[in-house]
Length: 372
Image (cartoon, rainbow, N blue to C red; front, side):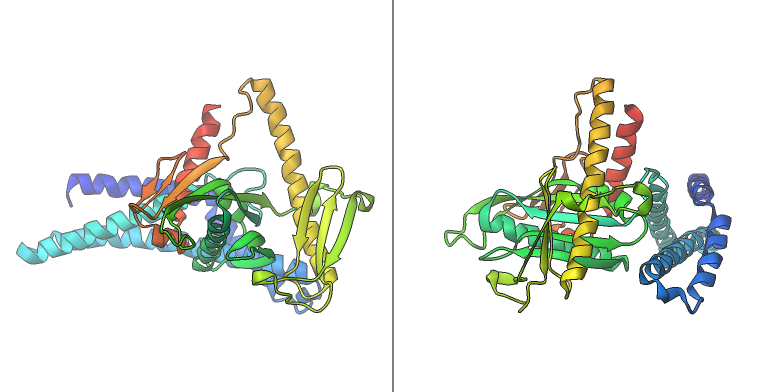
């Protein structure tokens, strides 16, 4: 084995050991055993909300253990693979070396991606995520763009086998959506997706312009942590106005014969939340209240952050405004304006291939926090 290859494998092993230590593999195995015991309890589903939390955490932890175990096995196999390369000669050796080098690069990418997870140590990073998407400037193109973003995040969740529950979709008249709210039901989805918060910009030839002109449109992405009972976000019912109305689908058509959709208005802050995707008015009210609590929690966090920024004297600078450009014409590129990470495959990105952007964002955020 070449000295530079041996040194690289040792470096990868060191990173992997750090990841294993941070994740505390022994504790992870112990926690999985506890959750499997709870999941086997026949009375578990007497409390559906708790049952969902148990099964979600169990699935996530099992996935984490499989990933770290697989990485360790691949690293061990790679060392053997390079030893076998040294036994080959001529064309066979060149071919075996190319395969080993390719696997080494692939393994490096996967270990570094796993390492990013160890950077999620914020107060709410372990939580599930509430994602709000709103069409911005750009008319019908912006509404279409908002729907494309919603699909992108749901496809990303599907690729990772994360559950998604859509709370509300407000359709635009001609095409696309005005707004949407959904929950990504997986541990750490808030910490992971929080770096996606901000304004997303799309440049393309508008499919809605009969003159085929280039159009720039915008959509806002907001990511909030799901509120838990320990957060003490109490909402006085007297502060909330409840309106009910009939659910609507694309083009404004009615999709429900009863007034099951719910709109909550928090009078002191002016925050408005709607939910229409559940079948009953009560279910929609419960879901809308969860989103309202998440928004109030985020408002509280922003106020606390503003106070700290004022004390630091940094003017409250935020990284969460315009943060990514997606260019479909006249060339192909997706670029993050904060991290400088970019790719020239927007079709893959819009189909949910955003892990590279998320990893770069998490690393960038940690560096920014460490510098403050």
